Image (cartoon, rainbow, N blue to C red; front, side, top):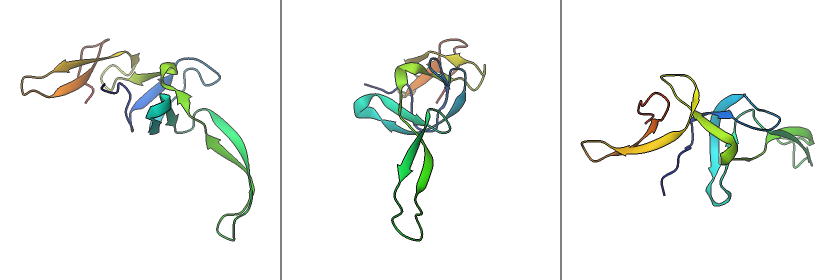
Length: 105
């Protein structure tokens, strides 16, 4: 099955404490249907120092967020939109914005 959200996509959070915020997808956790978005769903972690290059302390990390709570932001209409798939004349399968009907890929 093709992924509607991919790495480096600009996404908008639909629900939760970060609702309305946008950011790029840093990585995908495909087996759990989650994504890590830069600056979204921040949590604090207590880290032990492992050496002079990695000091300990309380650090902020991005936690994975469910992809059902994310929507891809279309580049042409600059709004969060649902994503569909279509085949082009040359046989490529591309994602498109269902709001403005423009290709995302």
